[in-house]
Image (cartoon, rainbow, N blue to C red; front, top):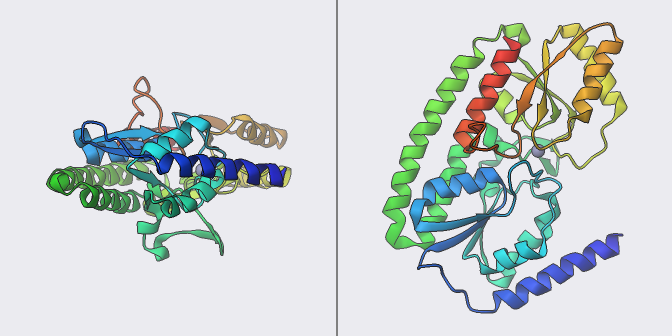
Length: 305
Ligand SMILES: [Zn+2]
Protein backbone atom coordinates (compact mmCIF):
# COMPACT_ATOMS: atom_id res chain seq x y z
CA UNK A 1 0.00 0.00 0.00
CA UNK A 2 2.83 2.39 0.97
CA UNK A 3 4.63 1.54 -2.29
CA UNK A 4 1.48 2.18 -4.29
CA UNK A 5 1.06 5.59 -2.62
CA UNK A 6 4.70 6.46 -3.39
CA UNK A 7 4.15 5.42 -7.00
CA UNK A 8 1.03 7.60 -7.21
CA UNK A 9 2.86 10.63 -5.81
CA UNK A 10 5.73 9.94 -8.23
CA UNK A 11 3.31 9.86 -11.14
CA UNK A 12 1.65 13.10 -10.06
CA UNK A 13 5.06 14.77 -9.80
CA UNK A 14 6.06 13.49 -13.22
CA UNK A 15 2.84 14.89 -14.73
CA UNK A 16 3.54 18.19 -12.97
CA UNK A 17 7.09 18.26 -14.26
CA UNK A 18 5.97 17.69 -17.84
CA UNK A 19 3.20 20.28 -17.70
CA UNK A 20 5.29 22.80 -15.75
CA UNK A 21 7.92 22.78 -18.42
CA UNK A 22 5.30 23.84 -20.96
CA UNK A 23 4.79 27.54 -21.35
CA UNK A 24 2.29 29.23 -19.10
CA UNK A 25 -0.51 31.11 -20.75
CA UNK A 26 -1.89 33.84 -18.51
CA UNK A 27 -5.59 34.62 -18.50
CA UNK A 28 -6.03 38.22 -19.72
CA UNK A 29 -2.71 39.05 -18.13
CA UNK A 30 -4.22 38.33 -14.72
CA UNK A 31 -2.25 36.40 -12.15
CA UNK A 32 -3.50 32.83 -11.84
CA UNK A 33 -3.59 31.64 -8.26
CA UNK A 34 -4.41 28.13 -7.09
CA UNK A 35 -5.39 27.70 -3.44
CA UNK A 36 -6.32 24.72 -1.32
CA UNK A 37 -9.05 25.35 1.30
CA UNK A 38 -12.17 27.47 0.89
CA UNK A 39 -10.85 29.90 3.56
CA UNK A 40 -7.69 30.56 1.56
CA UNK A 41 -9.68 30.87 -1.66
CA UNK A 42 -11.82 33.55 -0.01
CA UNK A 43 -8.72 35.30 1.37
CA UNK A 44 -6.96 35.47 -2.00
CA UNK A 45 -10.17 36.66 -3.70
CA UNK A 46 -10.51 39.39 -1.07
CA UNK A 47 -6.95 40.67 -1.50
CA UNK A 48 -6.63 39.95 -5.21
CA UNK A 49 -10.07 41.25 -6.20
CA UNK A 50 -10.56 41.47 -9.97
CA UNK A 51 -6.82 41.49 -10.67
CA UNK A 52 -6.38 37.76 -10.09
CA UNK A 53 -8.05 34.54 -11.16
CA UNK A 54 -8.38 32.23 -8.17
CA UNK A 55 -9.01 28.49 -8.39
CA UNK A 56 -9.62 26.62 -5.13
CA UNK A 57 -8.89 22.90 -5.19
CA UNK A 58 -11.14 22.02 -2.25
CA UNK A 59 -14.83 22.76 -2.32
CA UNK A 60 -17.31 23.43 0.44
CA UNK A 61 -17.46 20.75 3.16
CA UNK A 62 -14.18 19.13 2.11
CA UNK A 63 -11.82 17.92 4.85
CA UNK A 64 -8.31 19.23 4.03
CA UNK A 65 -6.60 16.70 6.33
CA UNK A 66 -7.79 13.82 4.17
CA UNK A 67 -7.83 15.49 0.75
CA UNK A 68 -5.74 13.92 -2.03
CA UNK A 69 -4.86 15.68 -5.30
CA UNK A 70 -6.80 14.46 -8.33
CA UNK A 71 -5.57 14.41 -11.93
CA UNK A 72 -7.61 17.58 -12.51
CA UNK A 73 -5.81 19.24 -9.59
CA UNK A 74 -2.43 18.43 -11.11
CA UNK A 75 -3.54 20.22 -14.26
CA UNK A 76 -4.66 23.25 -12.22
CA UNK A 77 -1.40 23.30 -10.23
CA UNK A 78 0.67 23.10 -13.37
CA UNK A 79 -1.14 26.07 -14.95
CA UNK A 80 -0.95 28.30 -11.86
CA UNK A 81 1.37 31.30 -11.63
CA UNK A 82 1.43 30.85 -7.87
CA UNK A 83 0.10 28.22 -5.46
CA UNK A 84 -1.01 29.31 -2.00
CA UNK A 85 -1.57 26.71 0.72
CA UNK A 86 -2.04 26.54 4.48
CA UNK A 87 0.94 24.42 5.45
CA UNK A 88 1.51 23.33 9.09
CA UNK A 89 0.48 19.81 7.92
CA UNK A 90 -3.06 21.02 7.13
CA UNK A 91 -3.05 19.48 3.67
CA UNK A 92 -1.39 16.34 5.05
CA UNK A 93 -1.87 14.16 1.98
CA UNK A 94 -0.55 16.81 -0.40
CA UNK A 95 2.59 17.83 1.50
CA UNK A 96 4.94 15.88 -0.74
CA UNK A 97 3.58 17.56 -3.86
CA UNK A 98 3.83 21.03 -2.34
CA UNK A 99 7.42 20.43 -1.24
CA UNK A 100 8.42 19.45 -4.77
CA UNK A 101 6.71 22.39 -6.54
CA UNK A 102 9.53 24.95 -6.01
CA UNK A 103 12.01 22.44 -7.49
CA UNK A 104 9.82 22.39 -10.59
CA UNK A 105 10.13 26.15 -10.84
CA UNK A 106 6.70 26.89 -9.38
CA UNK A 107 6.03 29.93 -7.23
CA UNK A 108 4.45 28.87 -3.94
CA UNK A 109 3.37 30.54 -0.73
CA UNK A 110 3.01 28.46 2.41
CA UNK A 111 1.04 30.94 4.55
CA UNK A 112 1.74 28.95 7.71
CA UNK A 113 5.40 29.89 7.35
CA UNK A 114 4.53 33.58 7.56
CA UNK A 115 3.55 33.18 11.21
CA UNK A 116 5.84 33.71 14.16
CA UNK A 117 6.69 30.21 15.39
CA UNK A 118 5.99 31.20 19.00
CA UNK A 119 2.32 31.78 18.06
CA UNK A 120 1.89 28.26 16.71
CA UNK A 121 0.55 25.52 19.00
CA UNK A 122 2.66 22.39 18.83
CA UNK A 123 0.79 19.26 19.94
CA UNK A 124 4.04 17.33 19.69
CA UNK A 125 7.47 18.43 18.52
CA UNK A 126 6.66 18.00 14.85
CA UNK A 127 2.89 18.26 15.03
CA UNK A 128 1.67 21.84 14.69
CA UNK A 129 -2.01 22.69 15.05
CA UNK A 130 -2.82 24.00 11.56
CA UNK A 131 -6.17 25.68 12.39
CA UNK A 132 -4.57 29.12 12.74
CA UNK A 133 -7.38 30.91 10.85
CA UNK A 134 -9.54 30.85 13.99
CA UNK A 135 -7.30 33.44 15.61
CA UNK A 136 -8.26 36.59 13.68
CA UNK A 137 -4.80 38.10 14.38
CA UNK A 138 -3.00 35.15 12.81
CA UNK A 139 -5.39 35.25 9.86
CA UNK A 140 -4.50 38.91 9.43
CA UNK A 141 -0.79 37.98 9.32
CA UNK A 142 -1.55 35.42 6.63
CA UNK A 143 -3.55 38.05 4.70
CA UNK A 144 -0.46 40.25 4.85
CA UNK A 145 1.71 37.43 3.49
CA UNK A 146 -0.74 36.90 0.60
CA UNK A 147 -0.67 40.66 -0.11
CA UNK A 148 3.13 40.64 -0.19
CA UNK A 149 3.28 37.66 -2.53
CA UNK A 150 0.70 39.05 -4.96
CA UNK A 151 2.45 42.45 -4.89
CA UNK A 152 5.83 40.88 -5.66
CA UNK A 153 4.46 38.89 -8.55
CA UNK A 154 2.32 41.67 -9.97
CA UNK A 155 4.08 44.90 -9.07
CA UNK A 156 1.82 47.19 -11.08
CA UNK A 157 -1.19 46.24 -8.96
CA UNK A 158 0.57 46.25 -5.61
CA UNK A 159 -1.18 49.48 -4.53
CA UNK A 160 -4.54 47.82 -5.19
CA UNK A 161 -3.60 44.69 -3.20
CA UNK A 162 -2.37 46.79 -0.30
CA UNK A 163 -5.56 48.84 -0.28
CA UNK A 164 -7.64 45.67 -0.13
CA UNK A 165 -5.48 44.39 2.70
CA UNK A 166 -5.88 47.58 4.75
CA UNK A 167 -9.66 47.39 4.34
CA UNK A 168 -9.71 43.70 5.26
CA UNK A 169 -7.51 44.32 8.30
CA UNK A 170 -10.13 46.71 9.67
CA UNK A 171 -12.91 44.18 8.98
CA UNK A 172 -10.92 41.53 10.87
CA UNK A 173 -10.48 43.88 13.82
CA UNK A 174 -14.23 44.47 13.90
CA UNK A 175 -14.83 40.72 13.68
CA UNK A 176 -12.50 40.18 16.65
CA UNK A 177 -14.44 42.75 18.68
CA UNK A 178 -17.75 41.14 17.72
CA UNK A 179 -16.57 37.71 18.89
CA UNK A 180 -15.08 39.05 22.13
CA UNK A 181 -18.36 40.77 22.98
CA UNK A 182 -20.53 37.80 22.13
CA UNK A 183 -18.42 35.32 24.12
CA UNK A 184 -18.98 37.53 27.18
CA UNK A 185 -22.67 36.55 27.01
CA UNK A 186 -21.74 33.00 28.08
CA UNK A 187 -21.36 32.56 31.86
CA UNK A 188 -17.66 32.11 32.67
CA UNK A 189 -18.06 28.51 33.88
CA UNK A 190 -19.83 27.51 30.69
CA UNK A 191 -17.19 28.77 28.28
CA UNK A 192 -16.29 25.27 27.10
CA UNK A 193 -16.37 24.27 23.44
CA UNK A 194 -16.66 20.53 22.70
CA UNK A 195 -16.33 19.52 19.04
CA UNK A 196 -15.58 16.46 16.88
CA UNK A 197 -11.96 17.31 16.09
CA UNK A 198 -9.55 19.71 17.73
CA UNK A 199 -9.93 22.64 15.33
CA UNK A 200 -10.74 25.44 17.77
CA UNK A 201 -7.59 25.71 19.90
CA UNK A 202 -6.61 29.10 18.46
CA UNK A 203 -10.18 30.38 18.70
CA UNK A 204 -10.31 29.30 22.34
CA UNK A 205 -6.97 30.90 23.13
CA UNK A 206 -7.85 34.21 21.48
CA UNK A 207 -11.42 34.53 22.76
CA UNK A 208 -11.29 32.79 26.13
CA UNK A 209 -12.93 29.40 25.71
CA UNK A 210 -11.76 26.06 27.03
CA UNK A 211 -11.63 23.66 24.11
CA UNK A 212 -12.13 19.87 24.08
CA UNK A 213 -12.43 17.47 21.13
CA UNK A 214 -12.95 13.79 20.45
CA UNK A 215 -10.25 13.63 17.76
CA UNK A 216 -6.91 15.43 17.64
CA UNK A 217 -5.80 18.29 15.37
CA UNK A 218 -6.09 16.03 12.33
CA UNK A 219 -9.11 13.93 11.37
CA UNK A 220 -6.64 11.36 10.06
CA UNK A 221 -6.75 9.18 13.17
CA UNK A 222 -9.02 6.68 14.87
CA UNK A 223 -11.74 7.99 17.16
CA UNK A 224 -10.93 6.36 20.49
CA UNK A 225 -13.71 5.03 22.73
CA UNK A 226 -11.56 6.06 25.69
CA UNK A 227 -11.67 9.68 24.53
CA UNK A 228 -15.44 9.55 24.23
CA UNK A 229 -15.84 8.13 27.75
CA UNK A 230 -13.45 10.68 29.27
CA UNK A 231 -15.21 13.53 27.50
CA UNK A 232 -18.62 12.22 28.59
CA UNK A 233 -17.42 12.31 32.22
CA UNK A 234 -16.10 15.82 31.72
CA UNK A 235 -19.41 17.01 30.24
CA UNK A 236 -21.39 15.52 33.13
CA UNK A 237 -19.04 16.93 35.79
CA UNK A 238 -18.97 20.40 34.29
CA UNK A 239 -22.67 20.33 33.46
CA UNK A 240 -22.04 21.39 29.85
CA UNK A 241 -25.21 22.20 27.94
CA UNK A 242 -24.15 21.67 24.35
CA UNK A 243 -21.60 20.00 22.06
CA UNK A 244 -21.09 20.75 18.37
CA UNK A 245 -20.86 18.89 15.07
CA UNK A 246 -18.66 20.17 12.24
CA UNK A 247 -19.63 20.53 8.60
CA UNK A 248 -16.52 18.77 7.26
CA UNK A 249 -16.44 15.89 9.77
CA UNK A 250 -18.92 12.97 10.03
CA UNK A 251 -21.51 13.53 12.79
CA UNK A 252 -21.23 10.04 14.26
CA UNK A 253 -18.51 10.72 16.83
CA UNK A 254 -20.42 13.64 18.36
CA UNK A 255 -23.60 11.53 18.38
CA UNK A 256 -21.68 8.75 20.14
CA UNK A 257 -20.54 11.29 22.73
CA UNK A 258 -24.11 12.46 23.23
CA UNK A 259 -25.13 8.80 23.75
CA UNK A 260 -22.29 8.26 26.24
CA UNK A 261 -23.49 11.25 28.27
CA UNK A 262 -27.02 9.84 28.17
CA UNK A 263 -25.79 6.45 29.44
CA UNK A 264 -24.48 8.29 32.52
CA UNK A 265 -28.02 9.50 33.24
CA UNK A 266 -27.28 13.02 32.03
CA UNK A 267 -28.08 14.98 28.92
CA UNK A 268 -26.25 17.22 26.47
CA UNK A 269 -27.75 18.73 23.34
CA UNK A 270 -26.12 19.14 19.95
CA UNK A 271 -25.76 22.91 19.84
CA UNK A 272 -25.55 23.14 16.08
CA UNK A 273 -23.13 22.77 13.22
CA UNK A 274 -19.83 24.63 13.14
CA UNK A 275 -17.65 25.31 10.14
CA UNK A 276 -14.15 24.23 11.09
CA UNK A 277 -12.01 23.39 8.07
CA UNK A 278 -14.31 24.62 5.31
CA UNK A 279 -16.60 27.55 4.63
CA UNK A 280 -20.31 27.03 4.06
CA UNK A 281 -22.53 28.47 1.33
CA UNK A 282 -24.48 31.61 0.43
CA UNK A 283 -27.77 30.08 1.58
CA UNK A 284 -26.43 29.71 5.14
CA UNK A 285 -24.63 33.06 4.94
CA UNK A 286 -21.32 31.32 5.60
CA UNK A 287 -19.62 31.64 2.22
CA UNK A 288 -16.82 33.96 3.35
CA UNK A 289 -14.32 33.67 6.17
CA UNK A 290 -15.81 36.60 8.07
CA UNK A 291 -19.38 35.31 7.74
CA UNK A 292 -18.28 31.81 8.72
CA UNK A 293 -16.47 32.83 11.90
CA UNK A 294 -19.37 35.09 12.83
CA UNK A 295 -21.89 32.28 12.25
CA UNK A 296 -19.81 29.87 14.34
CA UNK A 297 -19.67 32.39 17.16
CA UNK A 298 -23.44 32.90 17.08
CA UNK A 299 -24.09 29.14 17.14
CA UNK A 300 -21.65 28.63 20.04
CA UNK A 301 -22.91 31.55 22.13
CA UNK A 302 -26.62 30.87 21.53
CA UNK A 303 -26.20 27.24 22.62
CA UNK A 304 -23.98 27.83 25.66
CA UNK A 305 -25.30 31.04 27.19
ZN1 LIG B 1 -9.00 20.28 11.01
